[in-house]
Amino acid sequence: MKKRLISVLKYLLFIGIGVFLVWWSLHQIPSNKWGEFKNSLRTAKYALIVPVLVILSLSHIIRALRWRILMQPMGYTPSFPNTFFAVMIGYLANLAVPRLGEVLKCTILSKYEKVPAEKLVGTIVAERAFDVISLGIIFLLAFVFQFEVVGEYGMQLFKELFQNKSGHFSINKILIAVGILAACFVALKVWFYQFSHLRIVILFKKILRGIWEGLSSVNKLQQKSLFIFYSAAIWGLYILGTWVGLSATQGTAHLGIQEAISALAFASIGMIITPGGIGAYAFFMAKVLEKNDIPFEIGFANGTLQWFAQFIIVLIIGTICVVLLPIYNKSNKQ
Image 1 (cartoon, one colour):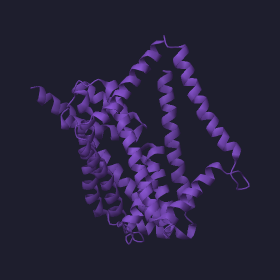
Image 2 (cartoon, helix red, strand yellow):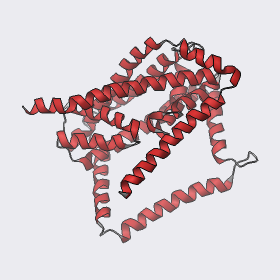
Image 3 (cartoon, helix red, strand yellow):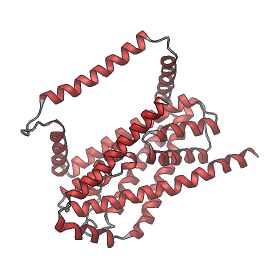
Image 4 (cartoon, one colour):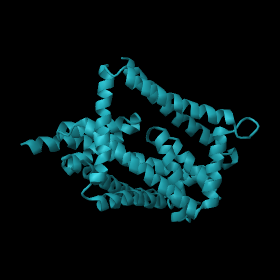
């Protein structure tokens, strides 16, 4: 009961952040600019959702193929359909509760492909580690192509996080952040040492061993080049999808790949901090496009459309996968 309450509160917190960012973003639009915001949505090229759907669907397919490569060193080769179903159902679950999808992905393959869930957790961690590295490369490319734009916005975000009321950097805030991280590290170390006999600690250690096995499987990959190619292809398709999305609204249609890379870099942060990126995705995209001389209301309209396109894709394909999963496995058994 307590665990369920914590999950509900966590969900309400993240969804609350998303709703707040939607409200805040709309209030950033001046009253005399509402006409431009509505016009951008009214005159948008909604037909471009089709190529975006194809591009992002292909990225999801490649992500499923990449995940299978991570399982091979552990001696598991799940079928592609079940792997793809797990990936899409995971994305669908993440729309509702952050990180729930990662649990469901492992549960589905554990049930239908008999792969130990704790070992799958390791592959998920490995995947996320490579995604973080890939996102870092995207930021690096954004700095190279748009140093003034990305550098200025990055410093603005950092200052807003750690500055005091007078507008200067607050040493106290930085020390508090470092202190909290150090305290968490020490608390975990003491917990593992003094309470190693508890069932929850033993279970947690088992999960950590599975995570380590999953991470170490990267060094044993038989298809390292293919794994790197898949990783590059996934993020290359994300860039392409963002660029196609920018061409959907008047005022952003003239922007190129460079602006798409910068928009993707910061919009990806929004996908992390709220369920499915609600509110945050469009907000961060609008703010970075604003540095490219695109009015906030135009950027927010485009960001909203791009977020909605991704939401619809996950909703439709994820729901289809939920229906097909038991049907496929039933026919497979027979």
